[in-house]
Image (cartoon, rainbow, N blue to C red):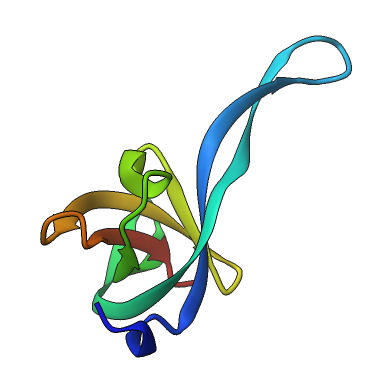
Length: 108
């Protein structure tokens, strides 16, 4: 994986549970790791559901492998350039060379 291709800074976030001021559990997102990545938009779609049009973009991020990112899974999410991407799948590249993360985000 060439370093020159990893030209985007992304944050991978994991769901965390905290308590509000009344002691009630609430779900928040905590940054697991911030890494350099390559980004490739692979598909965009538009849907008409419940009297609304919604656009969605599917993106492929590639990052270097490390012990920290080895546990990334579809329960996590990616944040890049102010947009939140829900992870759809994670694949290993080579023998622990990197990870390929396929994620979707609302385009509107």
